[in-house]
Length: 484
Image (cartoon, rainbow, N blue to C red; front, side):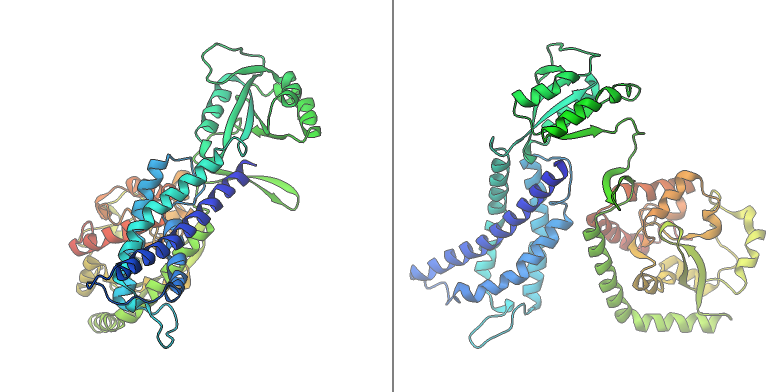
């Protein structure tokens, strides 16, 4: 029910946000229309709202996309309304810029009929009023959703039973999610503790009292939490589980006796079998799909725009040194998937065979290899490396799906074989053209620092983080920071 409750909350916010966005455009049009009725000579004619309504077919999907990418609908710990408003302001600022760009570019978002309008012909006053009204109306809608969920008639009352520390921790967590319509009905002891008088919620009895308590009180769910090392009470709870099942009460068991970790934990059904899932990688399929779509669109655009540059670099590499234009190497992709990694060749032919003889000059911790003034690098290759132009062919790796624009740099197979166990987790995210390491000093960092930056990226991944890293890559490349 808690997961279902979270979905209801998210859906309520989505519906509220989109309804308030549509209302914002309607009210903005009505206000602008009132200027004309007042007889002002400063405003021109205004198309009826029926001509503006199709504009919502552009605005609503754009708003939904930006709000989703900003984390407004993710399953997250409850936030205060003030925090939600702060995040909302940032999201709507991005959406407003995208809408302004569409208007400036003259994008048609609806078929033009005789006497109809395209986005380039909409009233700028209507758009400005719409943007000014949108934030307050969405915030008001979200406040109404919260008030509805906090209504006593819709709240879910939870009884929490078990060892004292775990009970108190769980109760505080439930209390922090009151905006999901959850409320602590009371606490139940496992027999190892009693009421001390400082509990914010009443202690109503022991395990054996639970069936009677749910008959006497309003209880929608019972959560049983036991500290690791006190699992002997689980057997005692068998009769309690059965009696609660008879009464139709949802019962949950907190599996905190398993190792605590950074993993996101979920329970799934597969062929009728319950699976407890632990994952330390992003699992939001919608956001990952948005990222993949953006990767393909941006890579396609860049390949088209940079095709003259690609041809010029290819000719320069071919003319100045014998050998192929492209350097191809087997690299490790997502979870170790092998793929052919592409770069413009920056070293002379047969460079890999010379690598063992240069091992004493390696300036990085093993297993990576970096060397200043590497004698294998050609003059053109040195320029390509300093400007990162040798990386441009990886746009084709991105189009193929082996890489993304942002992610841990793809590792050489031989290096991966030397990884320590904790370092292998960097393979759990699709490799990228740029990453935190790329914008944080590159070869000036130790190998462990490089690995920890990749793990930090994975643990904190979001679309906005990808955008920030991509923007920071531009000055890092121009300044050649850490490049060798």
